Image (cartoon, rainbow, N blue to C red):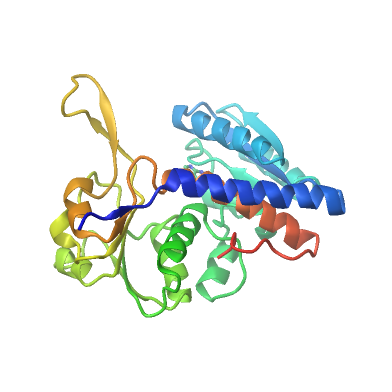
Length: 299
Ligand code: GUN
């Protein structure tokens, strides 16, 4: 039977609508408007697009957006000074420093200079530690989006076998921690994993986050498994010379013939990342004002 295609665009729109509703309530009942500050250093083309989209989405849900565009030769001390100001600004509930940073800036140092309460990326070492010890933290946006889609599809994830392919700090490791917290049996597979196809075939849930176009094919997937494809890879278009197309880490055609449910690329996990950034900003705002957290929008 053909797999159910999980529509990330529709799901993300519903998350944004829930955020917008909560933002409107915060305004009406408490006169609070959540604020997200995005810092972009340099001219990286992809980062400019991301930042523009984040700004537009932030405004759309009724939050305040503060954009800080700094030149590529900004010194580390100037950047740290700006982050310190944002840490101390009560109008700012979330701070995101767009990565990658120019080479002369120390990414770890910069990320860890954001106070954990405002770290809406969930990259600060304290948030990483709290997530891995099961404490309340800010959770990285892409894995949070994957978790929301999995909970929506399965209800409870308890006891399911999950294989996360990829061990990055941004997706693979936090994803594994979130699945463990929802009582999955979790395996992290990577480029050195022996017989990785057979490992994936044991999974009720496969999360593909390796950054290798169409690596995971249908013969890696157990009948009826749920496949979440985090990859976004630009490859030469097979039919149109000089053109490109986006594909995931999963070969959609063969995997969707085996899976029970699968996310497409584009239109799967991608749109969830910004929706979860907005959800995290709302959560940070509620926590800092000692208000109840928005239901269904946290891990
Ligand atoms: N660059 C690409 N994706 C991201 C992200 O999710 N957060 C930040 N801070 N930078 C990025």
